[in-house]
Image 1 (cartoon, rainbow, N blue to C red):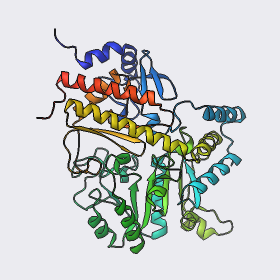
Image 2: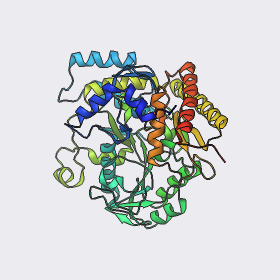
Image 3: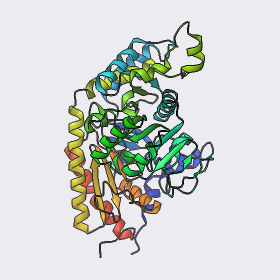
Image 4: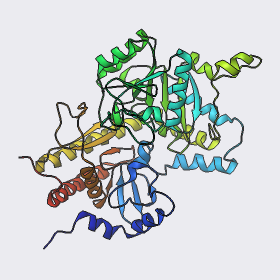
Length: 452
């Protein structure tokens, strides 16, 4: 009897999602984030609670997308619901400053080593755009330095060097890069190349070196500990500001983020996702007081206010709903216990997945960066965590994503996930069992093969 393809099984069990997908194509591209696309169409979620969610067809999933990494306490945490509901009843936008936002900023300053001052924004992308302006204004230099593969949002001067092959341009007038060539003020060097980093910094024309917390793609390509300290030493030597993007790692790696864990305090840092309690619209820039001073309005100093300070506005900055959510969740996260719980569960998960991989003799690996998990199918060089050359074909990624969904597990694109503090041992063990079924299904379908 012929085997039913995974695509046919997916369509048969996701009819309502298919209807919504086809309907959505009349008003949009069908998705609102590239990573949510899966073949033959994305799922549509109807509700979520704790570590689980349900789609419009009634299918249940153990969720590891966790709001793209923003939900350390799972979906619909009672503390978040109470705080937001109470604030909404009082008002969503005052058009003035509010006391909760002050408390929110004070919590950030207590937790994040770099945070002497805080400026709220709406998204991680916007935060990095503001940091680039701060760095250029403070140093008088124009260039931004970054490692290939490191992601800092979708602004054009940060998109370069994210999608290989790097020598080819990305659509939207984002030019290609060649070697260490400058493109629109951004210098891109090979991932984790300390020699190239010093060569670029030695020109003393780099305003800021941006590094993604945990390494590229939330630790999918990790960064050696000594390179963090080298980056700090060299940026200080050559007068460049060091920026650590903690959009995902902030408060997840530790209460003080990745910077506290590796022992390197940057000049400026980006916070997002978890800083706002997992609620949309909460992000921040934090850093040294003397740099953040550039945002300050000084009454009576016309020359400063017009020509030297940075102008910054934003309708939703520090709005009371985001502030309420941020305060409620950061108070829990500050204790440090939820991070330990999530990391322990992540370690249990990848160990179990690797047992399933070994049992079937597949060339693959599961690994974790603190509580972030990564799946890789294929060969790698040396330490899979540090291999900067590993890559998976899009078709293989889609197949893995689809088979995981068919077995009740949801990772972002099937290859990245985040374990929360509310994932239980039962959730983890059920996921491990399901992953074995995923591998069997992919082997049966001929998507993957056993080692020779």
